[in-house]
Amino acid sequence: ERAGYEKKALYEEQSGGGISIGGSYAGDGNVISGNGTGSGGQGVYLFGADARNNLVVGNYIGVDATGLKAISNRNNGVQVLGGGSNTISGNVISGNGDAGVRVYGYSFSCFCNVHVTGTVIRGNYIGTDRTGTNALRNSGAGIALIYSREAVIGGTNTADGNVISGNEGGGIDIYDSYLDVVQNNLIGVGADGITPVSNNYFGMSIQATGMTVRANVIAFNSGRGVVVFGVSASVSNAI
Image (cartoon, rainbow, N blue to C red; front, top):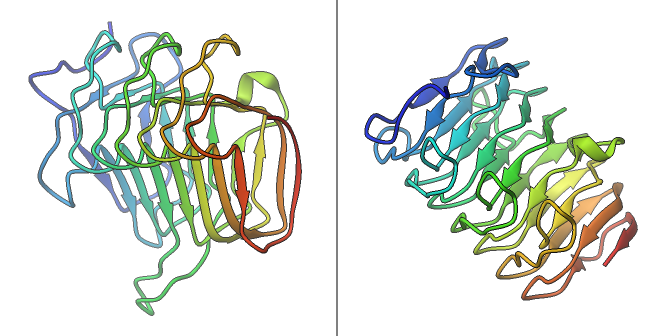
């Protein structure tokens, strides 16, 4: 049985490295929902230069223990501020008050923007329930990368792909980043690759350099499939 329950939300804030939140075995995952205070009401908050090599795996974030009902965190489901090489995998991240996952490059030593490197986001349902075919909207984008470098959303294997659908904002929003890869994701469709579960804006918005966007299914979104703002990107998808 999944740890946690809707009347007692679990809140994680971690500035260290090498921490596992949840796990890949049955019963390892947490319910991290209903948080409204502390560091802006994030579900999971990884912050600071030492927030590296952390794993967020197999949790229900913004939903109840059944994975079928939203119990919103007031802000983002997962917020990464600084650090690097963190992996967010196999979670249901839905129903949150802002983005499902927000990664922001920032340095507390200079109080300036520094690109956060090596984030991996794979195998998650972001904006849907645990079935992957019904919307439980995050109020912002499904995934927002801001000042990111060499992030991977999805991966080379089909199983690495995320379902990024049903969000109130766009599916994926990438800003001032470079060398990120977006591959094998379902954006605006359900986990079956057929059922429409539209994001309520664009499928993807890219303002970045050296992007690779390939082998994604991007369909049924309320706005454009992919919006590219004057940058270099290799795009090859079913849209």
